[in-house]
Structure formats: C-alpha cells, structure tokens
Length: 266
Image (cartoon, rainbow, N blue to C red; front, side):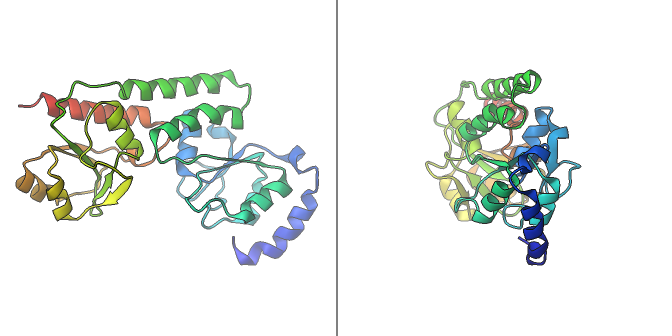
C-alpha cells in the first residue's frame, strides 16, 4: 500500500461508513487471469479496477503486492477478486474491503481444476442471476473439456512442456498444463511437482520424446536439446497459455493439435 496515501485513505474510509455497500459498483480484479476471464464471460464492462498488467481500460488500483489503496477506495467496487499467493492475502486488503462493504473472492489458479472452479463461481460473484454470463461460463468449461479429452498416445513417449525464453521453466504434473497432459493420457517427462526451472543437463537427463515450447519468446537452446536427446520439437506460440484464465480452452486445443501432429509424424 502506498504510504503517502494512508492519511487520505483513513478519511475516505471513515466517510464510507456503514452504508458503503450502497454506493458500490462492479468489480476490482487484482489478477490478470481473473480479468481475462471476466472479459471472456462478457463482463468486461463490470471491471472498475485492475492491475497494471490486466487487459482492460478500467483504472489501475495496483496489485496484491503493490496495492494503491486510495485508488481502490475511489473505484469503490462491490466485489474484489484476487488470485492469492501462497502466503495468503494481506490483512490490509481485508480491512479496506470491510470498510467499503466489498466482498472479497479468492481463487488459487495453479491447476486446471482450480481454473474450472474460477469459471464456475465467477458469474455468481460478479453478476448473480445473469443468465448470459452463466451460459458463457458453460461454453468456456465445455471448451476445456473438449481439449482435455483422452488422446491416442504411445505411453513410452514422454512430453516435457517448457515456457519459451531463456528461463526454461517447465510444467510439472501439479500445474494446469501438467494436469492437461494427464487428462489427455500423455505422460509428463516430469514425474512430480509443479513449476521447475531446468538446466540444460537436467533436460538432457529427462530425455523427453517431445519438447513442447509454450509462448512466443525466442528459445535458441532447443537446438542443443534436440541434438542431444533426439526429441521432437513442437511450439505453440500462444502467450495466453502462460496465464491460467478461463480462456484456456482455446489455447489447449492448439496444444492438443500440436501433440497430435507430433504423434502422427514418422
């Protein structure tokens, strides 16, 4: 929270009083993934506050790590939507929400199961009774279901999913892309865990049959992995897959197509 705003904030919160809920409007989203989901649901106009990284024209109110409390009070949302970190939500946000009369809804989004929960619950949180938004949520869930249908795949061929760029961040079974592989009956080269940063030797030791690169950043290290392991290289240059939002269904269809193309190749 910005220290310079605290004095003003105290006065503004005091002015809100017990009737704060009556003057509220819309939702403040402190998560790019949740913002993307709101837009996909057709609820983009309901966003009254966002992070600097969200795709929305709403005013910026900061993030969980750098909350602009004064901007959040001015936005006066009815609901505050967050993707909580492992250490939990800062008590300061809860205090502001209480004084504003705003409900706080939180969804961890590490796994595909958690993303599905977000899509199911978000309509009721922001627009209870809106059948159009609820129907759109059903469409988003159906798209994920289609992408995650079991595939015909050689069980001896393992797949290593890595984010594009220099970081070599791999998706273990406990991530949303790892859960996708499991649902499709495709073995993950990583046997356990969530996200792991891999060195070149780590990747060679894993000896994947397929190296699947997600994202659009250049990844020149794939040439060496291909040379040393003989892995087939597949790339899905869709950066939206790096944000675990309700729009994952479309991106996962692209991943599925890339895998099917590799499996069909000699």
